[in-house]
Length: 518
Image 1 (tube, rainbow, N blue to C red):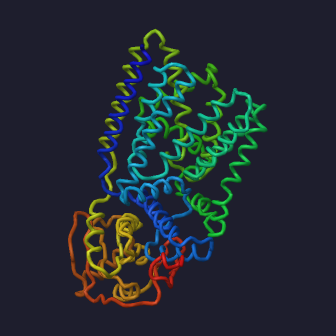
Image 2: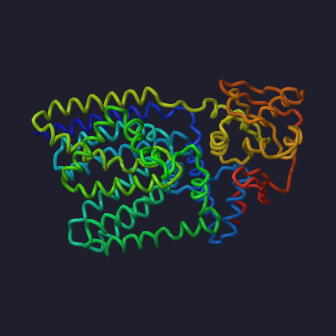
Image 3: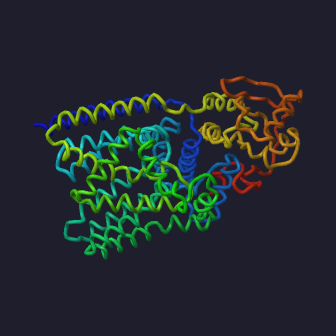
């Protein structure tokens, strides 16, 4: 009877949780989610065009990507592609929009809610423990923030949790090939969600090596099969010179990030857990309760200790630090913590449930009330510049990228307008008139908030303001759209654009990407 009531509580919370997330679905763009959503858009268009003109020619596929890049210079294919593939499938069914990609992530978050509840119940066989674990994890500020943005973090956390849940379910069973084949597929899928997900391999191997030696042969074979499943993807990265980009990004990390040779580097993720991944009271309670569980060697403590230890140490060694990078160990804290709380306060179960529920809901409400608002006007600007058939768009903002505008302009699928990133101003020499003519720019999107501008961007704005050939076509809340009155449509033989990451101009002889596959 108690279990039934708690199941109803879970369902009520799931409804409230989903409704709260859906209220944010129309919020303005964030930069990173626009990048990932755009990759999904590229994959949608590629799949649709490839079906019409199927080919296995590497050159044709490469030309397709370069043609697409010449219009929209932000195809970040070095990111593991599983979330973006999910976006692309959703776009094919429902049409392309930021709301659709966000809906994919919200559904992933709801799936995580039920997955963590089931996982905690499998460990404890107590529904009150499972409910508390679900409340602790799903009201975490980092989980909520990543549940409303079309990024990689929620699929990363979901698939890592599912993989560890499957390992937990088979570790005490008689080894069967099919179970470890499923483990291989889950590990491969997890790896394709985010580059930090590669920690799944050392977690599985280390656990088998230290605590479940009888499973080592089977888990090693599972890792090998997963590597084989992943080999086409890594071959693609190698062929396209994208394989080392994540490593390069780590080497170029913020110099202020603490390294493994500093004490701050070893405490960074501990502080993140207590202060950011959870709000302080909840984070402190979760950490202390989990430590009590591990110290007292609670049920399957080795499993959770390995999970936490391996992820923690590997992320300490990696120079680039971010609280998102260790989201995958949060289940390994909340499940033992919930179990320990009920062991410690077993005489006051109802009071404990009320206290945890109260703190979790406060954490939930505070997080929802402090969400970072995105960048307004992006959809409206895309619609405005898209009303005319010709003319490219140069984006001069302090965001450091044109991703939100690229996504909104590209989703029409018309390939009428190229988008140029702010780096064109930063790295190419020439007056505004020369740049406008070289790239066929009709509109310039100017950011009114100039705090993040470089010196060249500021001088560019001054030149535009002094030039009578440029006028404000339309004023928006944060951005202004400037029209180049000297623009004249030209029928060029090539489509060219400037790529920020490689600092080079690329050109494509194809007018639209689909022509490259014919």
